[in-house]
Image (cartoon, rainbow, N blue to C red; front, side, top):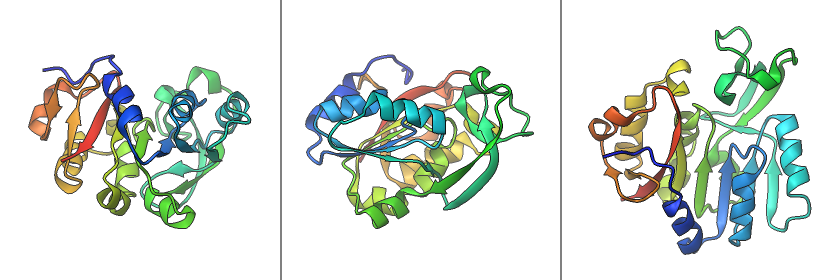
Length: 220
């Protein structure tokens, strides 16, 4: 058993087979995944709070029909996080947290980040997600917690990064996995579709304590 594979078989399958072509790209970065979803006919709501990164995405995808860009971070509550910077592994945390800056942001000033939740965004903007891509560098647990009602209502497939930085943000990998399998009632599949995990005990030997990787979360 190995949850960590470089395959994109399930990614391609979801893009092809998902009938509700509305996607939330949470942690959109410079828009690589958003471009693929747009190519597959999705309407894409792209969330990227880091200004220079978001600007690169907007330039890259300029004029693409079906794209809406949101300059907020997705978490488990709405608010503002002050004086954050891009730390190693691209995690957004306040300066002085003990993490090292990402090389590209050494010497750059901190900034504030507006946070929202999946539930709030879907309620206010009338988004009915058919697919969620979630890559927020350790904040995945918070993002899912802020979307329980939406996820339990619409049951979208979720491309989710398992990231070692969840530990550095004071969260428990075990609680995160149990939240996925028990609260949301989703299973965890490797990206080649060959391995299915439905419990923390199955995931624990493969948790990324060093290098992050993607899995697909699918409703039971």
